[in-house]
Structure formats: structure tokens, C-alpha cells
Length: 205
Image (cartoon, rainbow, N blue to C red):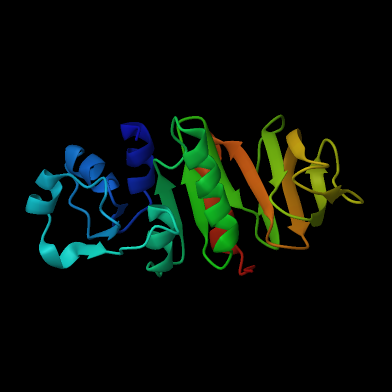
């Protein structure tokens, strides 16, 4: 987990919840998590000693990831996920799968280079001209857009068919989608603008 990513998230976060071994990363950054959720297969003995027992929430099942376990037990208007877009591709794919499986939650995954979120039913983003806007479907979905160099109206997106990577903003962008299946991928520097956009909108799946 990149310390810069964590610092960027903490500028917006009121509390820190760690998924399993993420607690060790939090402690290394001088942060005591308010809760740790997971199966604890990667939580160190040191973390188990230092974190108060009432903050440790062990879930002994192997049919979901620790991110999924944590997301199922968090109620918040917005969740910033740090460390889920790391070096392992299988972990990244699993995290994106979790976004779609829990479409009711507003979650932004952050990394040094990019942010990823499940596109809400509609969103208006104040983007600079030339900003890369990538759309990747994790199921059948259609949409309409205003402000993209290549409009998406009339396209039927599928994971094994049409995708929408490397589109570009002409300026402010407005998009809407027919189903909670579209990943929206933007440069990391767009985090503040995405948070602002989600805060202005009541659009939820």
C-alpha cells in the first residue's frame, strides 16, 4: 500500500477500517484502525497484540475476499479503498468484482496512478479537457454521455465485447448507465472531483 495513496484518502476519511493484513500497513503508517475485518490469515501477531481486541472482527469463511467481508460490514456514505489496486492482478480483479457485487455501496478504489469506481446511474464530472476516461463493463450495460470525445450512446457494452477504454473528456462530462455493471476508471488526480460529484448526486443503485 502506497503511503501517498493512504495520505490522499485520509484527507477525506473520518475513520479507518482495515481489511485483514491491511491493519499492519495502517500501524506502520502510525494509524490505529477503528476496526479490522477479515479471516485474519495475513494479520500479524504484532497487530493482534497492539490493536484492542474489541476492534478485531474475525470472519471465518473462505468464499469471499477480505475486502468483500469488510464492505459487507461497513455503513458509510462513501468508502475509499486503499491498497486494493496493488501489484497482483488477481487481487485487482477480485476487488473490481466486489464493487459490482455490492453496487449499493459507494466505493472508490485508489492507487498512485488511477481511481476505480462502479459508475452510478448518473454522474456529472468537472473534468479538464483531455482527461482520460475509461469505461470497462463487468456485465451487459448501455449508457449515454455528453462531453466525451467518443460518445457512448447506442453502444452495448460487454466484458467479452465492446469496452470503452481510453476515451477522453472534452471538458465537463455527464454520463448515465442502465445497470450497475460499468467500472469508471480515471487518473488519480481526479479523486477530489469524483468525491465532489458523488456528494452532489443522490443517484444510487
